[in-house]
Length: 93
Image (cartoon, rainbow, N blue to C red; front, side):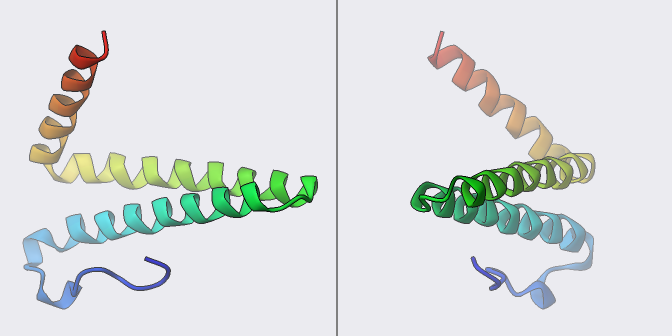
């Protein structure tokens, strides 16, 4: 993503806008996690690696915050997320 929103939020209906904003937030945070973890894997500097991984961990917390709010607003999302979790549990036992 790197600073480019993948959807035109102006075209989103009012009742769905907050959900889409939260999804964009999740995408941005996951993008940041990926970037920081890739950079950490590349650097030979232990201190930079430590800082990058710490920041990536904070971004994962942000993902959780956005997801928690999204699940409050989108009951279908909550239901499907739980369904996916159960499918994985069934496939990996």
